[in-house]
Image 1: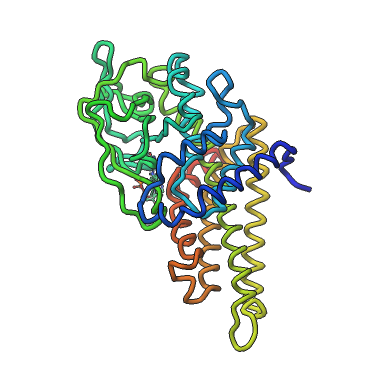
Image 2 (image 1 turned 90 degrees about the vertical axis):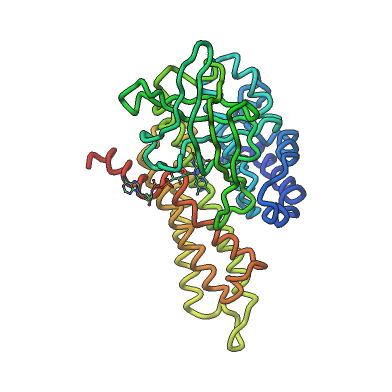
Length: 380
Ligand SMILES: Cc1cc2nc3c(=O)[nH]c(=O)nc-3n(C[C@H](O)[C@H](O)[C@H](O)COP(=O)(O)OP(=O)(O)OC[C@H]3O[C@@H](n4cnc5c(N)ncnc54)[C@H](O)[C@@H]3O)c2cc1C
């Protein structure tokens, strides 16, 4: 029995996303890898099709759709092998901060553009001196009349070059308790004092515009703060759960894709006059990987349903984030091995998939941080 009961409407949606990916993503994926970025036009095409921010209420131009539509979109985008078109980051990670915590005015101002793809978003938490320990961020936000003045630096911001709107974590230096000092602000690209820096040259995710961002006396209206003063850390802790669940869905789907392409390769490629797939070692390795993937899929689908039903998923999502992303790395490695030398060649998609899998246990909270959270909630 399937754990997730998709409706006919979900299935039609998946078909539409798949067709879109076949036409608008897969043929261009190599060019985007070369360019190191996905053209903004593609985001607008996604918006035209209704593929962005599906959960945003209709009052702000969205569809009020359930999270399963997001899961479908994440899976289908992951199946293309392209990592640059970070629509799930925009739709399911960044924009929910606006939908949940922004004032009515800010929602009306920004959400319709987020849905149409005219406004691409990013979230900037990590800084050069700190990533795992968010309480140690140094970027400051100081009140000055009707404005807040931002100073500091962020790094590893996904969509950093393409972004039109940023959710920024910054600290009020007048507040001693680091957990109560953090606030989240909306900062528009083009605001004086906000500069986009260099795109970071990464080992993988080459088409994703991950960048450094700089703030120098950047003045934003004080109304651009999300939620109550001092509640930034709590908002992050709440929304990071969905962010990590998105990573789990990506990890399991990426692993499924890698194994599918490896099984096809092993059936075709021969050695010693027989298909690679006929060797007992290949069969055992494939079955081992398939078993791990099935365990991951079962765990993640259950978590998706728990999340849809509004259950507290903190412990399970922390466990699943570390386990599924590390499982995807194990699968990537096993699949490259079964491809032999061709697994190490750019023209074979497994090579890129292997490279791209590595970061998943690092971003959105490292495996170590995930285990630390689970241990804490288990009373250890
Ligand atoms: C491709 C990519 C995209 C990213 N996108 C974004 C983004 O859009 N927005 C954003 O804000 N950030 C983003 N990040 C940053 C990412 O979230 C951080 O890299 C991550 O949280 C780890 O922080 P760090 O790199 O500073 O490592 P560190 O915190 O310096 O950690 C280094 C090592 O120490 C370990 N460690 C740290 N603390 C502990 C502890 N308490 N116990 C045990 N071990 C510990 C870590 O697990 C890790 O192994 C991105 C990163 C990458 C690579």
